[in-house]
Amino acid sequence: MTISTTQPQVADRKALIGKPLRTAHYRVSCEDVGDFLGVMSDPNDFVAEAQHVAPPSFAPLVAVLGLLRTFDWKTDFWFDYRDGTAMFGEQFIEYHRPLYVGEEVEISAVISDVYEKTGRQTFDVVQLAFTIKGDWDGDSIMTGKQSYILFK
Image (cartoon, rainbow, N blue to C red; front, top):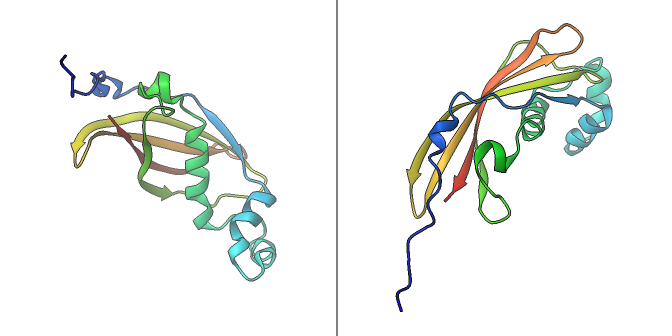
């Protein structure tokens, strides 16, 4: 009897480069900002003083939550997260204007790069380039990149 020790073949995810993902929406609520600021002594003071401008440190959370709404692991990344392991990688954000409480933002993304790395285990890094626009003015609030690590 022969036992195979090779991993099942995974399709080359480099073919995904350039693929646009679904557009998603996220409303910045007072509750979400308040929960996020819960580590401060009195987060309500910050929100009141800022006249409903969300703190800059809240923007990465919006990017992560929003981007998770733009893709489906299986159809967009050829990955079954129920059987495999996926991790959040790097994130880079460039701010163009403040994010406001009560504003609904539109998140769009494209798969900008895919590359394979080997450590203890082989994995793919899938990088997304994203833009987040506001509904009040349609202007770009932030742009950036995020990466996800998909173990093979």
